[in-house]
Image (tube, rainbow, N blue to C red; front, side, top):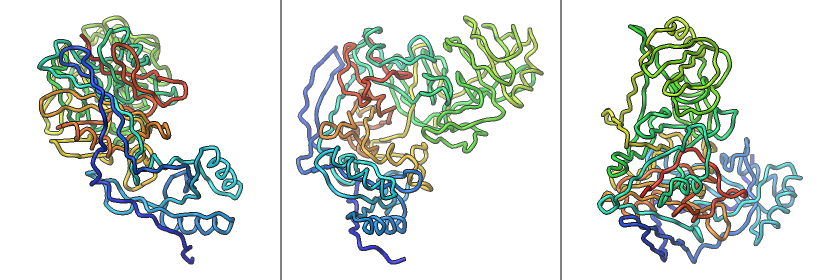
Length: 499
């Protein structure tokens, strides 16, 4: 096939640009708790509306042969296309050079004009979408609206904790929970289940610890914010978790806490299908699955094939049978499917004691221990490690080098983000950037989020949940502008700075 004569626009290197300057407004809400608000501006940025023609599966990028062929077909249909090369960002665990090729048509002053052209492109047999180029990593953003909380444990006399409210199966707006707890500052926390097709909405999709209790298990080795001693000793580490059920001399691996048996949101558990590795926004399945439910799972238990045992506070089996019902006060429940159900049926006779052993480790193999004033919120990926930008997006499953279209917009395009970090003075940094607001605030790419946190002096930093979940409340009132059309989103867990 002859190569169509189009213009190839190469993306500039992404490791060099500094964080744009901002004019900060600063206020102190309590001794040791400071709020900074600013807008990062790039006067040379000239974003516009355009039409992007998507590749197979509605992917925003494709291979060079696809791009040349598509551009030729567009030209034959009367359009003037351009082909843009998109390079891999400067992540620590992905290839260098070309990620893929993007095909676009036109540059327009408004979204309506871009949508009109997009409709005409669709009529010609293509899969187009109206795009704002301000979300591209390949050019600087014009505006990025940022809110930052700095908590100094040397001066702050309150506590910082991750919390899910009264039930791990609830969803609540960050600002509503903050107002109820009378917190000084709050941000949204980790990833959570949003659809009943993927589990119980509101439950955490990753490791979480609240008041020293393990409320959900890790999905692979992913970044976590550890708030020890009520947040006075905060650190960031990649954590994994194991739980073992023991009845006499018999043992069985528990692969989930407070989730639907057989459904692992974000994958990352042994035996998962299609993968045992973390994979963002994918629900893996497990045929043989043992799941524990704690007293904080305050909703109806999942039903379906399999077996269930109910345990009292001492771990004694008080009931056994079909799945369903609720977790008794002070007790717990084990549910099993497949071989795990057979084990429960054989070992979970009334009066038998089943003990659960929980272990959480960091990447060095050290066991992380909890008590009542410790909490953990996890997400992905790591942004800064040891004072250096170190975005391990592939390792933590937010993108896939073998499938450049997977996670492209999530990782590589500008989005609303929530970030947490710890600077060289031991201060906790909680930040949000608004996004998906053309001409108002573009958001960050993952790499921009890392650069921003590093510019604040972060020695360690991670990406928390973002998109429509990104929210910051100060004195119980929302201070940022969430991206959902319906306003602030109800989320799973949150990070609360409490007086």
